[in-house]
Amino acid sequence: MDVLDRDVSSAPEVEPIPSWRPDPVERFARPSPPVIAPQQEVPRRSPVRLVALGAVLGLLSTTLLIAAGWWLGTSFGSGPVAEPTSDAAPDAAPVTVVVADEQNTIDVLDRFAPSTASLQILVQGDAMGPNGQPAGGQVGAGSGFLIESNGEQYLVSNFHVVSAALEPGTAQLRDDAVVAARFPNVGDPVALDVIGVNPSFDLALLQPLGSGSFPDVEPIPFADSDLVVTGQKTIAIGNPFGFDSTATTGIVSATGRFLESVGMVSIPMIQTDAAINPGNSGGALLNSSGELIGVNTAIINPESGAFAGIGLAVPSNLLLEALANLELGGVSDISDTRPSLGAQLASLAFFPPGLRDEAGLPANGVMVVDTVVGGPADAAGLRGAGSTVSMGGLEVPVDGDVILEINGQPIGSADELNMAITYTQDSGDVLDALILSGGVEKLVQITLG
Image 1 (tube, rainbow, N blue to C red):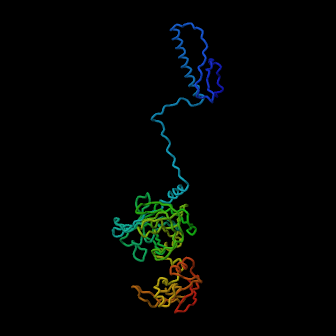
Image 2 (image 1 turned 180 degrees about the vertical axis):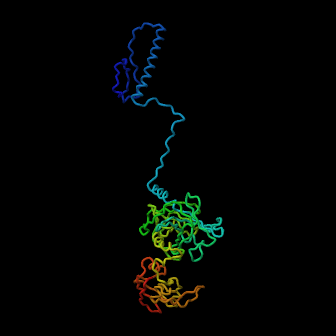
Image 3 (image 1 turned 120 degrees about the vertical axis):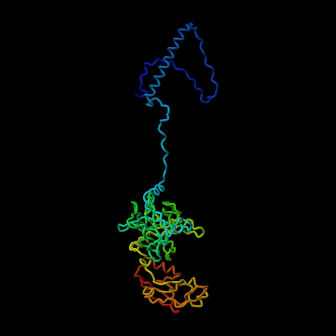
């Protein structure tokens, strides 16, 4: 029943108490004392009767108070208020606020951090660690991650991480070498065999030895690294300084950052400011969808060797390009998938000016030092150097053909020429080359292999 509908007809009439409200303007003024009318004399009552009357009034007051409490409780539904006890439920835990970008990182790591591993390479008990310091028989350490190709699972890492465990010039493990991978929250490490390596792209492909197997984790999917743009988010997962499953975030700082790999070939790296340190090599660089955009491989810091905001990763598309040959096993290189000139080259810009003048060489261009028999340069009639001049303890070639232009574009250095051929041409393409041979300029055609 609503409070306003209650029947109060039986309640005793109470004379209203007059109230005094000051004028708003004079709210602090002292009020005049009320005028008291003269009282008629009241007959005295006996003390016994007064005590009895007081008891009755007290009982009536108590009854009214109890009834009022019941009436308020039932009207407002509050009921009696319980005193707090030690058995009261504890306060609810505070809620952690996670912004959308943080939640994205958490989701990616929950899904793919278990797919990354720390690698240890042991050879003859030599005490060398990833930074060249003693590390209890460890001659190498790095990172790797799980992928799937043609129904098979593989671990990907860098060639330079596992190279110390290989017989020179091969992908075969030394008899005294062990390569092992430890996955997060998995008890025993997985002993690995090296299937194939590609020094040009600094890549290695591994699988469990014998009857071993990878843990039941999700392989990391590939992204199209050609679509990577500067400014997008990056997540690096690896094993820096032996701290496995370390995750760092950043952005793509640049793409197409050419750097010479361990195979002495310039490749277009992805640059990131996500922290990468010794031990991160071979780890995964992911985008915000958890897809692989690169294989972490190098940092730039000439002074200390620690991270200084410039990390470099081999693009995922180069891994995809090399994958078929890696699966076949053995050693492969850039020439298996990319066109080449088939020649050893030297940049004239690095020749001493006096030598160039004496030999009648131009200031710019690229000299052919040697050619691969039957290769594109040899088939086009280009001639390597037949003589050298000793300068400062170095033998400098002086009489090889000089490539001045390719398809009408001046050539400034050997790296520039190699990258133009490797990354903008295809096998079978025909190049128009302006060369200087025996002091005479001529145009020749070179069909790339």
